[in-house]
Image (cartoon, rainbow, N blue to C red; front, side, top):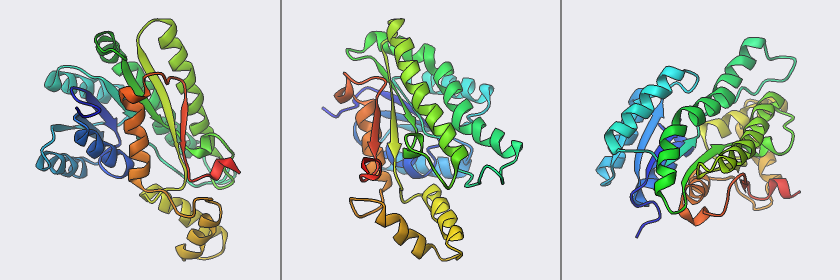
Length: 267
């Protein structure tokens, strides 16, 4: 038996990157997967790839800052697959601006995706997750994408750090609320370190700028000196952690943060 046989998962921001890889691994593990994103064509391409590999997948347009998008997405997923067992709040943005540079509009955009998106996703999938949790031996699961920047400070983007710290504490609080109410929904967060993604390249670009160059290689080498394991993370490294937290292998975990950072925060 695969680890997610019979489960239905909804992953936000899953057209590419960590979300797309998590979708691929979940399909391999036996789940049916719904991808939500604003990148419609890219999202549909990801679904076609999953279906070509023999998986069951669907795509919904999902702007995580819009309540109506979440409502329509959840209705589509539960209508097609008959329920929902797993939510992965993966969608996120990174501005790379200092406190002095960022405008109120920049801050609102960051909060809209990184904080409001997680709140809305949790709130609007709650009825479906609660229903499936009552039928499952180990309940249903929410996995929130935080960051190492949600654990330690970020000199490159303190506002991003602020939002991801909020995700980390929201995860713990939601886990406690749902446990108190007997909802049988486990809520955990995952904290990636420097990872080879589009967002990771944004981080490197900011490091390069701070070094006075447009060349990403010196920034990459500088980043590597901070990673004890000696390499940057891959989308597969992070996606494996997501699948673990979503599966019954993590049945005794709730309100926890899984750090996948190559040792950065151990220092």
